[in-house]
Image 1 (cartoon, rainbow, N blue to C red):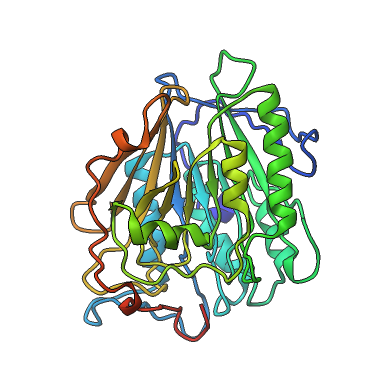
Image 2 (image 1 turned 180 degrees about the vertical axis):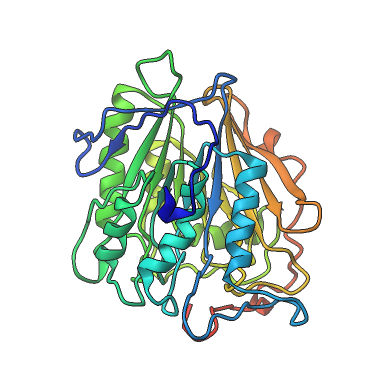
Length: 373
């Protein structure tokens, strides 16, 4: 597609998709996402790129002697796709922000990297995506109309807690008639609970109905961390780094309790706090940050930009995850098993270490320059 930078010759396996959008019993397209022949399915996580186009688009927390622009972000994502060859790219918000003019141009450029590589993708919104020239519903509508997008609008709630872009993807063994894995994707906004009661109800009803027919493990994706991330990292062993305050919104959304009640979600992934990239177990669910590949997003000097990669293996029997760094050797760090059917959390995560933070209250509370977090 010339609009997104030319034709890409990457071979794609036949892809089908099933989406659950408005109601637990309402299914969209009858196509399906399928595992590879070896039983794997790989996801590349992209969060907090803060891709800005306009009169002031400076990079943040980089060596001032080196040239840097928004192209550093898109070039890194292109390298990630080339080296990891993901089956799906999952975007979890703050892809653009108030300094992206126009918003559509920024989204086309950023999402266009995956589109050029012919990789299917799914996106939800963070708290900054609708702060330029498009409101929240318009941003999500634009996303759903881009080539290869698997996102659905599915508005839930009203007023300050109205959420756009809540959906579930189902993953099949090509020879099976029922799914063997799922992923739930949530809008995550700067309202008091970030994920509204209506969204929690949607998840509970949808997951309950789907699991009643075909029980399957699942992953959860949203932008702003749940309160439980903060609780867990203070007491649990972690992989990765706890470099800044866990900036959850003030009210408990009850989403974690819903995950526990249904029992299908084995790991969750979020962004928002760009320099946190840890995973920690909390009551049997892995709570993971994704890291930020964005050069216009705040970061840490001498700490490479990064993105998480997660691979579902054994046709849905286990989940591994790691981070890929934007350094000279494209390093892989913190590769670990997050979940495996029939194995306890203690056995899986015995090699994790204490968080190393002696005084959590001394951690910085970071925010994107020019705007509140």
